[in-house]
Image 1 (cartoon, rainbow, N blue to C red):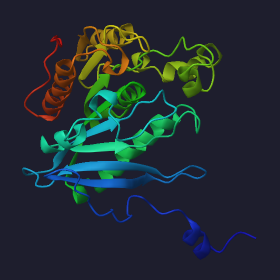
Image 2 (tube, one colour; image 1 turned 180 degrees about the vertical axis):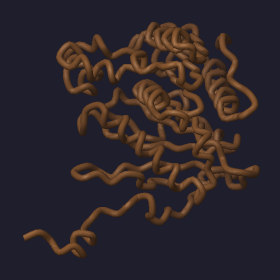
Image 3 (cartoon, rainbow, N blue to C red; image 1 turned 60 degrees about the vertical axis):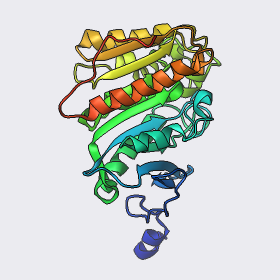
Image 4 (cartoon, helix red, strand yellow; image 1 turned 45 degrees about the vertical axis):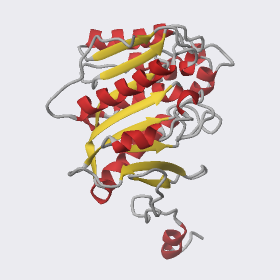
Length: 298
């Protein structure tokens, strides 16, 4: 016998779109942090949560949004970790961005040990929907969103920007993969796809940002170390070339001497990369300007 309709409704998971928001913490002067806010509750899976960093006193009007997607080879990672070179910053990178006038969203997504592609992209797409629903309540400009990620998160940030339509105004990729169509067995890329690329070519192509580029893509800033031994700099260069070939804007900035995670880069180079990210994000959400292309971190 099926459950009574009232009981079925009672047993249904809560809707994150209407759940009360947690009380704000204040991890740095002038900053509010809403930590572990549920944005998706999926059957058979852990609830997916996000952290939301906000300025204590917004300058006026809805806040532009910067979505940070964490790295970790698609199989591990923490949503509030922007990489080892930024962990010791005080104030941290998200507090700095909030002080600069952004709402910073750091979401969870399902990892490759939980579900294969397109699960993480589906999660991030749902997160954008949650932001739109709660934008007025939170004082957010849901039509002025920049995605940003590092490593696996850079790959997912690029896919989100390329598939979300006009909801995303720009994308910043730090040393992210761009083409997964040659992923061999027993690699993080194959684990994401659920098989070696040769055994799942359509899914590998769908998971490759270079294959999702169109002329409608938002502007991109792509930063990649020239000595990256995990994801070669040729991946970043290929994404920029695909975007430009489609007629979209792409600012590709190789970072001389830097390995993956900015290992080997001087502190001033890491600071310049972060400053370039903020500058690009500001330009991308401005109705009056567009990011300039062709510059280089030196």
